[in-house]
Structure formats: structure tokens, C-alpha cells
Length: 296
Ligand SMILES: Cc1cc2nc3c(=O)[nH]c(=O)nc-3n(C[C@H](O)[C@H](O)[C@H](O)COP(=O)(O)OP(=O)(O)OC[C@H]3O[C@@H](n4cnc5c(N)ncnc54)[C@H](O)[C@@H]3O)c2cc1C
Image 1 (spheres, rainbow, N blue to C red):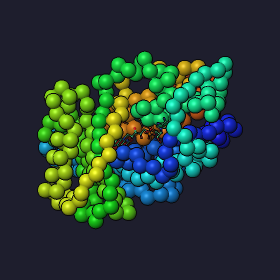
Image 2: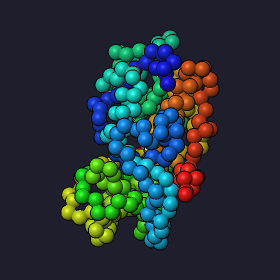
Image 3: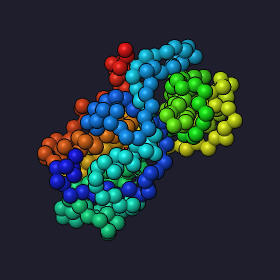
Image 4: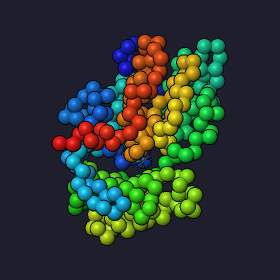
């Protein structure tokens, strides 16, 4: 959006793309709306689900809903290429302000900064830290793995609060012969019980094996932590904006973070272009209404 409006901008990212991002890659139809394309126009692999196979406290049922899954490996690279913006591989460390310019590591400068560096975003750390240092209650810890597999069940399985786990686990089969399995839950609740995510991960792996969904796979999961949306936080300062996980915008019920990351990025761009107020009110705090809306 910035590029289309003629704003001179660059993206700094520490990773080489395509890069691995721990994420199940589930996206709601609203993601395509935000990107102003139809699912058919998405040029990479896309998995379509007409229902989720849900287990709630051990009670199983089929929940009809039209949802999608992408591979982050492909999706993020496609988004970057689509932006048509110069991408510089650089790990941002030190940001200072000199008059009306932000100086990054003495090497890059700009008049406006958008911090979209995820949970440990350096822009957030530099300019917003005080308001974030106390936010421990909405912290989600997660681990997942995506791997090639001869899929035996093409349904998306979600297990909520299984064995008392404060969160949910998933099995997401994807087009092209990939499976994403993972688990994510409330860090504070786990700690208070003296439990670890690893214990529940091991149970998930055992369950996947017992149910015949995944057999004979040597797991090598990735872990990551991110924040669910909480009470309003300051999202911008003069010419500095935060977006996505840097601000902690994932939905409170399902930890959906891709849609809020995209929507907040677009809203930040809009605010920069039109010199409008940056407000996040239009970004949903919950995913469940979208799942319900998409029921046939
Ligand atoms: C296991 C797991 C499963 C998930 N599953 C889903 C799901 O199925 N659906 C969903 O909607 N959400 C899911 N989420 C949440 C979702 O992945 C995130 O909310 C979303 O990726 C946030 O996007 P972002 O652009 O803000 O941050 P990120 O996607 O984390 O991107 C941040 C970027 O900043 C770069 N960066 C970081 N630090 C620096 C630095 N110092 N200098 C330069 N660059 C830097 C990184 O390389 C990265 O490319 C999941 C999260 C986890 C952990």
C-alpha cells in the first residue's frame, strides 16, 4: 500500500526468504479480503477445509466452516515479492532518533518506522518497552512442526483443553503432502501448575500415533511465544507504528495472528499515507465469529 502510494520505503528483515516461521498456516477467508484477492488468485499451495474436526474436553464433533491453510514458507515470501519493495537482509539492533530521522545501526535512516518484527521486535523494545514489560498474562507458548507425510486423514483436527491443557493442539494436513502438527497454550497457567509444554507435546505425539494420524515420524519441533490481544496498548508514537505480534494482536480465543498482522500493517500504511489516526478497532479480537459466519 505504501509503495502504491509512492512512499519510498524498504523492508529490513534478519532472515533470508523463504524462511521458517513456526505457524500452522491456518487463515480465515477475511485474510484474502484484506489482501484484495480471491483464494483462486493465490498462486501458491492452498488447502481448503469445509469443516474442522473438533474435540472439546474430549467430546468430538464436526464443525462446518470454510477455512484455509497456507504454508508460511511460501506465503510470507509471496507477500514480500508482491509488495515490490526492496528487502534488505539486516538484523536490526540499535535504533536512535536524530531530529526527524530514525537511524538504524548507523546504516539506514528514515522518517517513519513500522515495527513488525514479531514478539521481540526491536522497534517495540526501543520505543514502547515500558508498556510491554508487564504483559505476561496473554503469553502463548507454542511448538509445532511441518513435514512431508503420506496423509491418511485429510481432515483438520483441533483438540481443545485436552487433558486439562490450557489451549489447543492441531493436526493440519496440507496440499502437496505436508502435515503441520502443533500445540499452543497459556504460559502463565502452565507455570502455575508446574507443568511444561513439552509434557503436552509428548501426549500429542502419542495421540497422533495411537490414532494412526502420524506414525514413525522423528519429530524436530520449533518453539515460539507470542501475545494474545489484551487491553488497548499504545500502538503508535510520533512517526513510529507497531503491527502484528510486535503489538500482541493475536485473537484471544484461537491465537489467530496472521489476519491481525496483515490488517494492522495495512492500517499503519493508511495512517502514514493519509496522516490519519492509527486505530486498531476494526481488527477482530476473536476468531470464533468468523468461523461461525463461514458455516454453510
Ligand atoms: C506454533 C504457532 C502456530 C501458529 N499458528 C497460527 C495459525 O495457524 N494461524 C494464524 O493466523 N496465526 C498463527 N500463529 C500466530 C502467527 O504466526 C503470528 O501471529 C504472525 O506470524 C505474526 O506476524 P508478524 O508479521 O507480526 O510476525 P512474524 O511473522 O514473526 O514476522 C516477524 C519478522 O521480523 C523479523 N525480525 C525479527 N526480529 C528482527 C530484527 N531484530 N531485525 C530484523 N528483522 C527481524 C523476522 O525474521 C520475521 O520475518 C501461530 C503462532 C505459532 C507460534
